Length: 373
Ligand SMILES: *[C@@H]1O[C@H](CO)[C@@H](O)[C@H](O)[C@H]1NC(C)=O
Ligand SMILES: *[C@@H]1O[C@H](CO)[C@@H](O)[C@H](O)[C@H]1NC(C)=O
Image (cartoon, rainbow, N blue to C red):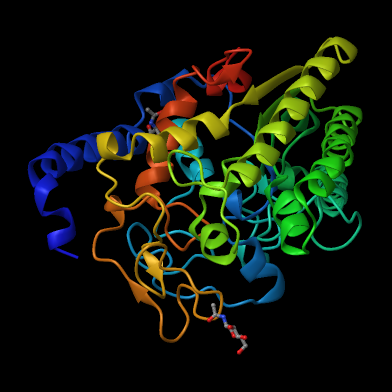
């Protein structure tokens, strides 16, 4: 591994300084003082934003070295450290969002709850933990919170109030698994693309449902470049690679999904006039990490830090990260991909910095727009 990066050692020193500054600024956010009301966030989605839901819900083991960099233990997050959503929470100086299913978390849901679960998709509906199930869980969470808060004055402050729900930020980051599952089942590109309207329509119904529950502030992430994931690259036999070595058809499906999602948000803005719906272009941010990997000090943007098989992708579906026989790189900061599917903390930190820059948001509101009056 050492020789691999020898040529870029001076670059890497600058890069380490750069990343340290990014991590530091996200840990001690100067922005934090800008929330004038306590922020409340509800998040729905898949592994990209699961902060321990799968482990809490199913007891499914997610072992070390997941979590090794920041938490120093596995928290159920699929990364060596923090996820994008963790950095977004830290930018508001609010505690990291707890999984809704974390029964040992006590009543530490004052700043919201995370309903995202590894592997979730929009379709099929009504199977755990599809978007529609996550929304049902939210409805239960809301009515139960309000009920408990009204049952005794001494409990009032421990639960989110009606106002808290109304002013909360509702985040959705889902769709990647819908597209991924379709390809995995052997569907062709055109069969996969035909599913996109239904997937986006599920997300649209989800936003409307939250609106009907009183939510007015939405933060919608589009999906990343699926065709740049080492997992996909290692499993697909006929490779239609683009100039940066990613699968063109997978990325094209992701981009079509994003286009449709963007239009849907636009449509909802005209229907739900008193709602704020922010669409965030995660795809462009993530693709730029791959395309400009040298600039960020990522030696091999298409290779997993943790996995099996070595170059070029270090991914094997039978020996995935954390399982017997898998290997892990020394410096996760040199990798975009942690385990072949999910990003390293270093990559997530850069994604977060770009999300917070507002340059990828439409309309371009600051992330704290919902907690500032
Ligand atoms: C951040 O939160 C901590 C703990 O709640 C608090 O002590 C600190 O003053 C806050 N900082 C800012 C800048 O709001
Ligand atoms: C994984 O295991 C299955 C069953 O043993 C085998 O057929 C397949 O080739 C293995 N895949 C890889 C990538 O090694």
